[in-house]
Image 1 (tube, rainbow, N blue to C red):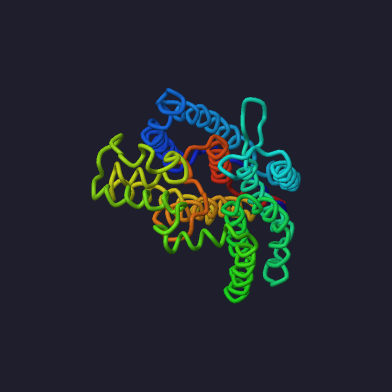
Image 2 (tube, rainbow, N blue to C red):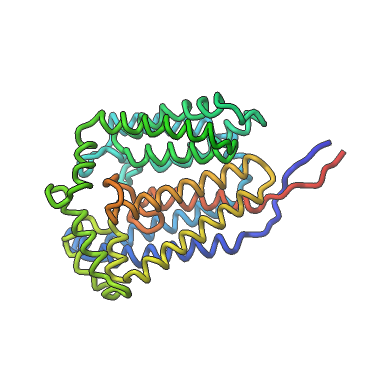
Length: 367
């Protein structure tokens, strides 16, 4: 007996529509949040918008290309991609460009590249490859430990200068392990070990403990200025906001408003209503990815969709939690919305993978 997979040829219109809505929403919010900084720094109010528009166009092309190639091809390349992500992360530590005290970028001629974004995708593919090779032996505690241990090298490399991405990578690992083997007792034990690891990691550097202090009492620290101004922006937006383009906090009060704190500007300009609409769009996108994962009858496809869903969910929750000061500041961007060319290209590439998975169906058994 032999089973195979073939493409249905049908595009998941709902997924495409949600992605395009987020992309358009993000470009509009970015232009509004960044026009002051662009005008002051580069004498061009559309400076950040034009760069993000170019990256978005490149990302949409990547999404189309990836969606056209059988996702099994990318799974087969997963070990090489994971090794490459470790090499790139090492290169950042040695040769990376330092911006605002963090080394996260590699310069490639006129372009800059953030390897941590590639690391997220490579981890999803690598864990999918690893779980698939385990066949059905995914119900033991050793499987859970072994799978997480394979992530420690990239977590250590990325986490040395980018704690937020390290947390996301660990979260992706936990979600995929649970999707492959939903055993609650073992999962709770793994979660406890993960919390202990994060606690040790936080205590290893004094500036990470300082962030905890700033989170508790931001008004007592100079570095709490960004958090306080972000909260002012959220509070002043009210129910319907000041109107698009009318933010006051983006005029230098919220530093780098187009980056991590862009959600606060959205709240100020569009109010609670706009914030809820954006959260609902994200929720619908996560629901669609969940549907794709649950309906996929092949393990590797289900794992890819679940990993992408986990990545987006963790990053959205962490960003909004940071902006609202629910958790300490981790320097994490809001997917599809915050400024970042590398981020939008790889996010749209992940959406291409999800579209690819959604196009697959099982052939009837043949003898």
